[in-house]
Structure formats: C-alpha cells, structure tokens
Length: 124
Image (cartoon, rainbow, N blue to C red; front, side, top):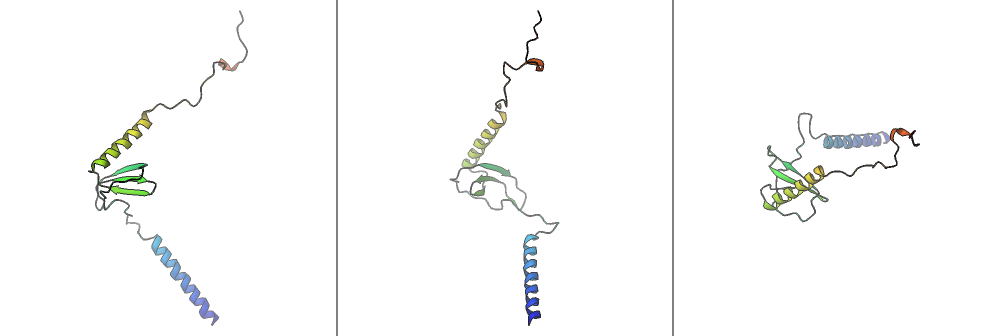
C-alpha cells in the first residue's frame, strides 16, 4: 500500500514537471516567438501615451504603430490621422530632449585657485 502511494506521488511529480517543461519550452530552437501586431485597431486611445514604436510589415506581422500606455501596448493602424498626429508629437518631444542643452553638472567658483595653490603668488 505504501509503495503504491509513493509510486502515485512520483507519477504526479513527473506529469507536473513535464507540463511545466512543455509550457516553458513551447518554441524549439529553430522557431521564433512571434511578438508583433497581427491585428490592428482603429479605436482612439484615451490613456496617456508614454511611448511608441513603428512596426514594419513582415508576415504574419502587420504594418502598425504600437503605442505604450500604463495599461499596456496597443497596435493601431498607421494610416489613422490621430495616430499620425500622436507620432509627430512624440517625435517632436523626443527630438527636443535630444537637442536641448543639459545644465552643467557643476560650476567653477571664481575663488577656485589655479594650479592648486590657495595662497597668492604675487612676488612684486
């Protein structure tokens, strides 16, 4: 009776482990996981957009704009006027950040001695 119980537990562990292995290794070494837009939406987003990327068509992936919000990523049709406008705004913000001059990390005081000496070297 004890041997049968141990055998059943072992079988359960093997089945559980094989299910986990199958789920985590669903794509073989030659297969690629497809993480792209295969369907696009025409619905206007109401959440604030915090980022985006452009996706080119490469079947089964469609040409799309992928907007990122706090709720997740959304695939939208790239020809929609409001999508084009949002992309222009986001690109302008990105370019502004890239071309703006950063504030200096530190400033040199007028009292900073030149050459490391803090005493006057006037010998006249």
